[in-house]
Length: 421
Ligand SMILES: *Cc1c(COP(=O)(O)O)cnc(C)c1O
Image (cartoon, rainbow, N blue to C red; front, side, top):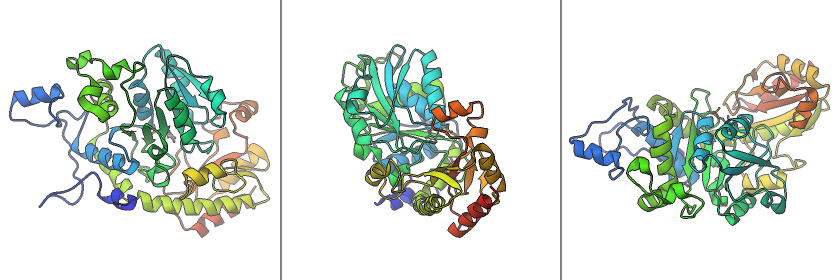
């Protein structure tokens, strides 16, 4: 199956007389004929559902679909993108460990890595995504256990050189985790370029309609955890009578451990109804991404030609610093997200945004409806103009998430907004 077909048909295969549409299995529990069978489920020697804090048939169908889209061997849904980032790291690292992350990533992830994980004794070093191999290699320590980056960074829109980071991570016998939220598997499949684990905020394009919050962790099955750096994978887990994940689950060691150990203990598993809504979004993902990219490319070119605009940041523009990386990793398009700055700073940006009629002013991105955000007066409001500059956010910067409306309606709205500046 090609990827458009997988969006519709992977994960759920109804048998003779069964519902055509994925059913919502709204049940916390599952019934078995014998206590012996339930005992086997708890010992991980038999497979099956037993409690919806760690698995559920509706959520499971979505996990199988997204694993197939990314080219992974298994996946685990979570209640948010934040929970996916957290569990993807906690599954590998513990207090006293260290990891390396690219500095241009989602702001919420920076907080999680720099503040909250630090309180748990896990340290993160941030590196410039464009740094040389040598500069990145220098940040490795004997206790470094992972490398993390974002395919298309939110909101910087830098494009990650996935092969470079995979090569450096693997030279140091550690896995590369890639947040593929903005690209989606339609535009880029990081596993094909060497990523070992892929995560998403499914709240964004995968859902696409702004109706559910969710995340997912996908395991490539390619990383060899039989390595002295990772005793949690290749030594007995006392919380399961001495199960050894690499021995009992082979290629699925990482994703099995994330589910049966961390999801069991943390409990950030989505409800069946939420997964059902996500699945509806996934069915049209390929079609939607195609149009998001097409519309955004036209909008970026329009803004680039406007004399009211200071600069436009979109990796699909030839003058963009990430154009050649985008050609390699995102040949079908660079998603619907653009950032740009209006001449006249903060006041001009606010006048423009308040003047828009079609685009909505929301704290959301990657939606079917065109939406805008002014970081300097919302998500980054507490920062001074100097601090904004250090974070790569000019006072006039606007993040524009181009939706699926008719391109002429989008362009006309931007035009009348710019006329009010
Ligand atoms: C939104 C986002 C997250 C966090 O996801 P939530 O679903 O809001 O918890 C993580 N990474 C990226 C790239 C995001 O855009």
